Image (cartoon, rainbow, N blue to C red; front, side):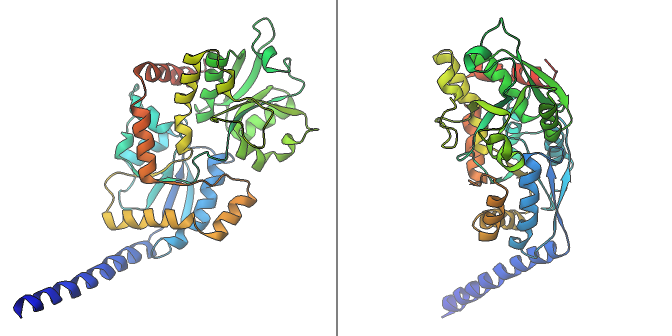
Length: 352
């Protein structure tokens, strides 16, 4: 009889503790807002995704906190990553959307400016895993070269491509295309943000740029019309051609040799985590679980999905565990690729 009484007390206690914990999380978030840091300037793809997330996420967090976006550009979101890891409150009130290259940069640890360990972040997931997207090289039709073959010829003028000043995630793709498929390109690094590069293309200051296909559909859909002044030359981060770009070759198809193709495939790995969202290390476990559940529930919400479709954004979410598995795959890349990546980031952040 005594054993049965003790067991009953344990059951009652267990049921009492769970609501108490849930109430504590609700009380906390009812009295606090969540800051979503974006490691890029306003106007680009991270901004679009972050504002969409901020508009909907609070409805799925206990206590329904307001979620506000704060931009923290610098170093292609390196500044945001360092802040999140070292200075942000570890109480669940600050999360960040980082660039897809940040885990790789953290693994390389090749500079004193890298002040975080990617596996120690609290990863919530990514709204996109790039399943339905592509990174494309788009150029003006009046550029000095008209085809891939011409773009590979060193005796013709190079394609002049615009790139961001802060070492953004897109700065590496033109250099990878140069090294693996032989494109003759000159990268102009110094534009403050993605909209400024579009303006430079429109004015003829540069011939083109690399950009995510979904971002172009959302911000410049008229550029994809057959009669537009632009053409897509190559697509990156695709094993096969995007269904909407059946006549545009992939970088893998154009690789100079098997070694170049292998390098392309390794360089495309970060795209599987596309726009990863992290919280600082060592969050209280109850708030951590609440944030993880909220992130997953958000991506099953019909209004969120409808709003994303209206913005032409690729929604193919992955959770935090999948982000960690992707980081592990990157960490296991051959040493020669990691050496190449160190040199690549030094070049794209040094204006080379």
